[in-house]
Image (cartoon, rainbow, N blue to C red; front, side):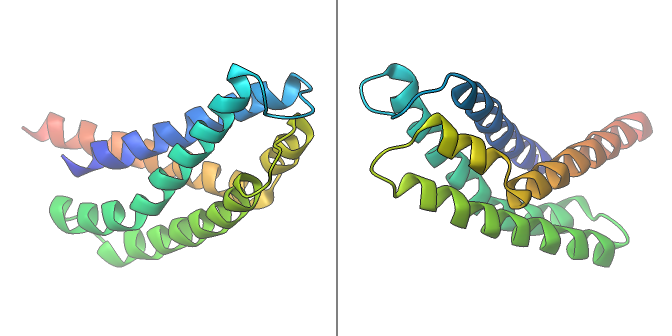
Length: 139
């Protein structure tokens, strides 16, 4: 079922954010030479991949699940995709740096783009869970 794909992408992005919070709190001057440093790059790359697939997942879900009114879902998913694109730009800028410090990740975490995306994802996952519960109750 497609909502699960969206939910998996949301979970991946949220896990990255949680790891990034932990990384930022550790005060690393660099990502070099530590397991956390290697993991921060992996987590950020996984989040970018999940963000990139949101547009396709959302469009497919609207059609497959026949959410109504479809235009309301399409309008919100368009916002979610814009927020994801802005977040991707910020994360890719961080990934392009030769060194990723805790302070750099802390600044990324504070980005309004990333926070907007996370809030979008919380809303979407709650709506999908409600839709799934409604579908199960009617079966």
